[in-house]
Length: 177
Image 1 (cartoon, rainbow, N blue to C red):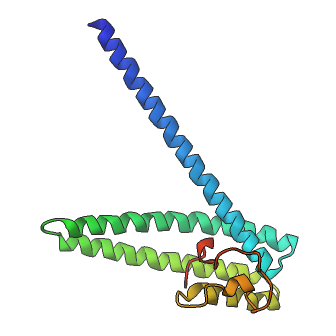
Image 2 (image 1 turned 90 degrees about the horizontal axis):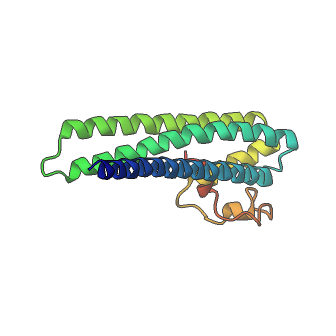
Image 3 (image 1 turned 180 degrees about the vertical axis):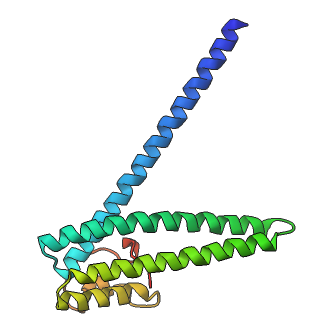
């Protein structure tokens, strides 16, 4: 009997340690992916705006801060949307709870848009007037879901700049206005 208890105890400890280790690896992979996306976004801006080394460093700092805040809010929005769908799927949905969820979604959506606005204004501060015009055009293209998906590939001024950039910028983590 003692041996059985010891074996069960050892098994439980091994499972807990394994689960914690796996969870830590998943979080580390998510952080790495987030950092790679942030670096890709800075390279995207660097190429389209022709940033100097100093501007790239400033963009990197602003981008990391924005990415962390936006990621946190986006994750919370995803959780809230799932909660709302789960509540709607119940035989008798609680409309008060749905109203609370939608209110929080609206508030978070507003906060996310304000973070995007602050991010844009911070980026704009370190740009030259010519770069500011390109930045505006980049955000205009990224904010238009019906727009030309290849516009940023051709470059924000419609020329050849950015031909090697893959995608349309929307996957670069910049939220649409």
